[in-house]
Each structure stands twice: as C-alpha cells, then as structure tokens.
Image (cartoon, rainbow, N blue to C red; front, side, top):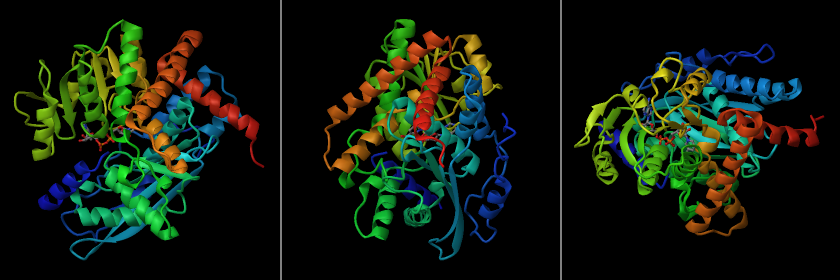
Amino acid sequence: MAKNKQAADALLASADGVQNGANIPAVAAPDTIEILTEDETNPPGHTPYDPTPKASAYAVALGQLNRVADFMDLEDDMRLYLRTCQRELIVHFPVKMDDDRVRMFTGFRVHHNTTKGPTKGGIRYHPDVTLDECRALAMWMTWKCALMDIPYGGGKGGVIVDPTTLSPRELEKMTRRYATEISPFIGPERDIPAPDVGTNAQVMAWIMDTYSMHRGYSIPTVITGKPVSIGGTVGRESATGLGITYITRSVLKQRLGRSLDDTTVAVQGFGNVGSWAARTMHERGARIVAISDKFGGIYNSKGIDLRMLQRHMAETGTVVGFNGSDALSNDELLSLDVDVLVPAALEGQITKHNAHRVRATILAEGANGPTTPEADEILADKGVVVIPDIICNAGGVVVSYFEWVQGLQSFFWDEGEVRRQMERILLSNLEAVIGTTTRRRCDLRTAGYIIAIERIAAAMKVRGFYP
Ligand code: NAD
C-alpha cells in the first residue's frame, strides 16, 4: 500500500495541474449512496468511506443564494429555478484492482444550470465526495462563470475515493471507467469537466482519451486542464493561483492602499491552488509565513523558503516536518495575525465556530465555499475583507475557457497572451463587483452574486421557460 501511495502521489504530482426551502426536495438520500459505496467485499487495506455527517455544502450554497435573493428582491420564479440543479447523474461501477478483486466505486456528475451555455466544472477524487457537495460546487460554478461573463453554466462531478490509496494502474482504470459511465453526460457542447481536488492533468488526459476512443476520433475539447501535448493550454496549471494573486493585489491596493510587498500571507492547502497562490504572491514580494496541508501546518515568521519546501514535499508528500519551521495545526493557521489568509483546501473551513478567531485583514477564498454564511456575518462585523471564491479563484475557469476556445479553433496562444487575457477578464469583473458594492451598499460576495444572477436572469428572460 505504501508503495502504491508513493507511486500515485508521484503520478499526481508529475502532471502539469440552511436549510432546504419548502419547494425543493430534501437533499438526496446520502445514506443510500454511502451504503452502496462501502462495499463489504472490498479488499482489506482500502481506506473505508467515513460516513460521519459533515456540514452540507449544498445547504451553505442555498443559504448564500437565499441571502442575496432576499437582498435583491429576486422574483420567486427565478429564485425557484436557480436553487435547483438541472441534471444529476449517480454512477456505480466496478474496477478490477491489482490483486484481481473487484471493488465498486460511486461517482457523480451534476449540471446546475445551462441557461448561458454548456456546463463547466471540475472532477474531484476525495473520500468525502457526495451528491450534496457536487450540487453545491456546480451551483458555485454557475455564479462564477456568469460573473466572469463566459458562456457556461455550472457543473461538477467526483468519485468517492482517496486516490492516494490506488496504484497508478488502478487510478487509470477507475478514471477510464468513471469517464465511460458519465460519457453520455459530457461533451464539448454539453459539459466540459476540469481538474479539482485529487485530480490533475494526467487524469484529464485519460478522460479525454477514453471519451475519444468511444467515438473513434480525438475530441480534446471535451475536457480542460489537460497536458499541453494533447491540446491543453499553456498557463492553465498556475491559472487559479495566479488569478488569486492578481485579485488580492488589486483589492489590497484599492481597499488598503498597499502592495503585496512584504505582506504576510498564510495558506491553507498546498495543492494546485495553494502552492501556485503562494508562489505567485511570493514572486511579487509577499512573505509566506504559514502553509498547511491535510497532515498539518508549518510556520516561519521570516518567511518560508518555497523552493526548499517543494523539495521537501517531493520527498515526504507533506509540508509537515519542513526544516526551519515550527509546527502548527490547521486551526491555528486560520487564526494567525497575517495580512492575507488564503484558504485553498476544501469547503466549510471557516464557520461560526472559528470565524471570530480570524485575525487576517483580507480573506482571499482560493477554495470553493470555504466560508459559511454565518461566518461571513462574523467576519463582516470584525471588518475582515472577504474576497469571495466566485471572483478570487476564477482564474482557473477563465483559462479553462481559453483552452476550450483554442481547442475549438485549433489555434493556440502563447503564455503572455493567456495571462494578459486572464488578468483583463478578472480585473474588469472585479471592477464591476466593487462598483456594485458601492451602488448597492453590500459586501463583495453579495455584489458578485447580484451581477451573476442578473446576467443569468436576463438570459433566461429572453430564452423563456421552455415549453
Ligand atoms: P489539490 O488536491 O491539488 O490540493 C488540495 C490541498 O488541500 C492538498 O494540499 C491537501 O493536503 C489539502 N487539504 C485537504 N484537506 C485539508 C484540510 N482539512 N486541511 C488543510 N488542508 C487540506 O486541490 P486543488 O485543485 O488545489 O483545489 C483546492 C480548492 O480549490 C478546492 O476547493 C477546489 O474546488 C478549489 N478550486 C480549484 C481549482 C483548480 O483549478 N484546481 C479552481 C478553482 C477552485
């Protein structure tokens, strides 16, 4: 198992990477899904699915929508329409493991809304993936795409699995079978997945290949975040982290009259998003004083040497134990006295239980949905500037859009062009959000939602409710 884990880690690292309303059915029976997933015939040694209930991400997403819908006095029809996911697919599938035994997996793909175009959103491999979480993440993708004014609705998918427990061969087989199961649901004009937690460019390549094999010709535009050698775009791997840096730098300047120079930063999560956010902020003068991953965190008030940390990560698979740093817990990291806090791990990290301990001046949401609505209120009272996920981490989907456009045209841009266009789209929409905060006297998240919802509602009005 340790050998498998190391090999899978190396593979993953190597590729370029409330309440429910009365008129909506209760969140779909997660129990059923969990029971089906935890198959007793699974070989011993596989990480069991932990059925401990956690805060519903979908409840958080609905809570955020409800708040803004009340604030902007959204019509009931539109509110009902937007709170509901349009299509939801659950798949159960077998994979023959290395020891020749069959293991059953459960996966999902959700399309939240297709008003403005095909759906777009990541694929997550994580033991805690649920339909509820996919719904929330799909809904957040709808707002993000509309706020960036790119022609997509929101989608999301995932498989209940800890990919680090699979061998590279098992990971490929599981990915190809999952891709086969969801293939009627995806496509360049239908739904275009991308990487998310636990997946990377290599996984996207397997999905692209599987989809293409079934149709008999290469269809690179079915997925984004794939390697450049098969039609990926330069600049996609760093896009989400770099976008966080562009947005944070602009907010720092506009709100506090400060630059990134010698700004202190703490980053929770050191995967694709967290590591690129840290690296690109550091390149612009910021001091990264704390970093964590799922195993724990590290702290150095003088600044963490990111180059040496990458070397340590390659050897150990974690930031924990890095020379010249003090150990700290994820909880301690969230309450550090820093200028910028970047949660870049999972949703639901800053809640009513710990928000009062946040001491950062700016909370730049790298992850999707890291802050609950109750925490938002506490942070607002404390004067913390929250840059919401739908603008802060939108660089990833913007460059995914560029990848799709380049693929459809079979004409590829250089990295300078990708970065320039991403910065232009991010900063012009940030300006629109800041303008709305002034006009409507609201926070950045509310302003972002208002713009997104108004754009979708306008499109829906001209399309009409079919039939
Ligand atoms: P990743 O798998 O590359 O990295 C996730 C990181 O979070 C790892 O370092 C992991 O150890 C850490 N982590 C997991 N659980 C943790 C915990 N409880 N506490 C602290 N750290 C923990 O994933 P990623 O692609 O970097 O995605 C991170 C977040 O950013 C997710 O919310 C994802 O939806 C969001 N996001 C990703 C992209 C993208 O382009 N990859 C784009 C937009 C948003």
